[in-house]
Length: 306
Image (tube, rainbow, N blue to C red):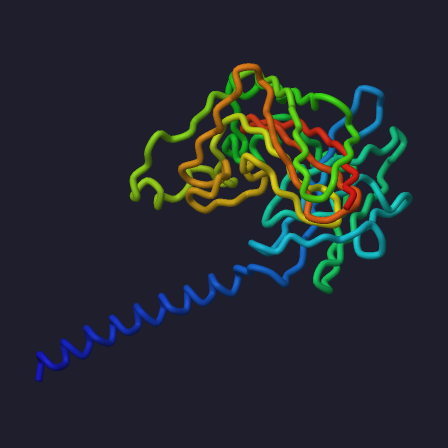
C-alpha cells in the first residue's frame, strides 16, 4: 500500500511538472508570431546638432519573426504635425530595430511632440517624440541600448569609440533592370573600437547561461549591410548580409545571436555587394556600418525597369 502511494505521488508530481512545462511552452508560443501582427513604432531619444537644431531618433518593433510589411507613406504611415514624410521606412524588418532613422526639428521646437503613426495589419500604433531632458541620447546611451555595453556602464575604450564612416562609391542614384545584378562598392572606415568580443567557441552550458546584461546582449564587431528601406518588391543581396535587426537565435548571422563572428574586413576597406530586384519601381536602399557600439548609415536610390 505504501509503495503504491509513493508511486502515485511520484507519478502525480511528474504529471504536474509536465503540465507546467506544457503551459509555459504554450505561453511562450502565444507571445511569438511569424506573421499577422502589428509594428510598434518607437521613439529612442534625441540629440542636439551644432547648428542649434535637434535630431529625434526613431526605431520600431515588428512583432513578427518572418513578415516584413511594406506600408507606403500615407494614412497608415505618417508623421504629424507637418510633413507626413520624415524619411521613415516603408519596409519593416523583423523584430526590434533600434535607432533606425532620425528626424531633424528646428531650434525653436520647444515642448511640442512629433508623432509617428503606423497602421500594420489593422492595428494602429503611435510613437511620441519630444525634447524632454530624460530622452537626451549620447554615444554611451546608444552603445548601452543596443547591447554593446551593460546599462549604465562605460570604459575608456567605449568612450573613445567613434562611429564608422561610410562612403558609397559612385552615384547615389542608379538605374537597373529587374533581375539584372547591381554592383555596389562601399568604403567603410573604422577606428577598430570597440575591440571585437566574438566568442571563438561556446559550450552548450555557456549558451544556456542567462545574459550578463540587463539590456539585449550584442557581440561587438564591425559589419556592413545593405537592406531595402523603401520599394515595391523584394531584393536579394550577395553575399548574404549580417542582420541589422535583433535576431537572438543561435547562428542567426546576427550580432545579437550566439556564435556570431564578424565578417572578414576587406584589406582595402571596400565592401562589394551585388543586389538584384524582383519588381520594377523606385527603391531606396539603406546601408548600415556598425562596429558594435556605434553606427553610420548611407542611402542610394535605384530606379528599376522591366
